[in-house]
Amino acid sequence: MAEPGVLDGDGRRTGVPAISCLEDNPHRLADLVGLYQEQWPHWYGPMGRGSAARDLSACLDTTFALPRCLFMETPNGDLIGTVSLRAVSPGSDLFPGAWLTALLVAPPCRRRGVGGLLVEGARQKARDLGFDALHAANARDDGLFVRLVWQLIGQTSSGDQLLNLYRIAT
Image 1 (tube, rainbow, N blue to C red):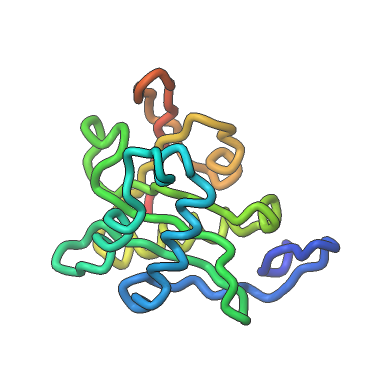
Image 2 (image 1 turned 135 degrees about the vertical axis):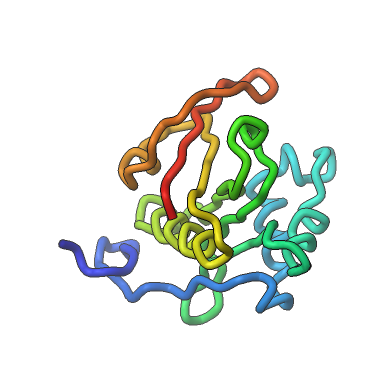
């Protein structure tokens, strides 16, 4: 079994970076907004329909269990990834509950274990919030969900994309 952590640029395993909740670290809001806008300009950029500030600010309100935003940072504070839990996502009309959304790993940190750690952090947070399952919709490579043993539970469409729907017990 591999030791915990992520792989650095030379393939060496490093310590596990911290996973934190945005509601506990509101000072990171602007950094996360910038990451969303940089990585998803078609949605959160100047010509996009979304508002990263609005979506992420909703995660600061703990009146309700969802939404929540988790982020991962290096020991020196560099953001390397984020994931959110939401009640509304493509497929949530078919399977109500907690949905993993907005999984984003900074380009230099991809394929180094960060995504899996973020997904597992989101799973733990969903459990802590009282959910017995976590769902996800994915239009791209399903390798991460297959590798983490998520169950394929169906498909749905969003716009012109066919999405696979997944579930895992928390």
